Length: 323
Image (cartoon, rainbow, N blue to C red; front, side, top):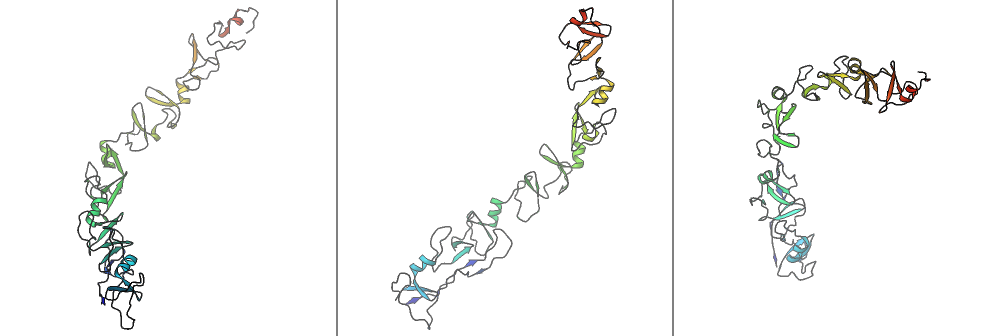
């Protein structure tokens, strides 16, 4: 009878894919040790699974029961994640979580270097050394295009990442860290440099318009500085008029510059109904241009005048008509 004192299988303690934690080597709970039958146990004669005799053959014992080697491999041995072969009773089993490898298969899938007693990562069930994992899966700096190593300080801005030392103002070269950043033509600037080189100046207060500005007649304004030139009412988001490049609210413009309707004495402006009728230096809203006697609309019609009154032809030609 032959019985082996085989080496115990080897497991790696569970750990995260990329970390600085130490990994130690010891048998796991899944490791099945091969030992000689002790003197207190009756010498087995057959395999518990296939019931074939193990007399004069190599066998192993699990939970005080004997198994021939083929049955033991079938029932208890793991499958190597790389070569898909059985990890036999006399082979070392390198395991990580629910994955297993032969010792010869426990290598980086990229550089093929052995990972025994070395830090490693598992990505989609593929073994990688830390260097290959970093090169394949770590972020690259938007500025220098080099890898941002895990654990190093990085800056995220508008969907891209930088080394903290690479995230600098394109003008003065100073690191910007978490300070406000201004962007122009895909380049980043600190606020002072951006204002110095690119920012427009408000036509009203002559200060930099960095955010929240607007344009009027191709001139930049702060929204809060865009006021009626007469009453100083805020005009942003409101209807307004301009005269000689100056903005005015509706009331001020109508009071200062708009024509007055001869009928209702209200201003004729471009808002509401902008159509109007003019006759001998007099103006009317088109809705107000009516016969002074019968109130019929005279827009597009012939009319007569009597002193300051306009009349339709019927009322104006009737000598008995009273105005």
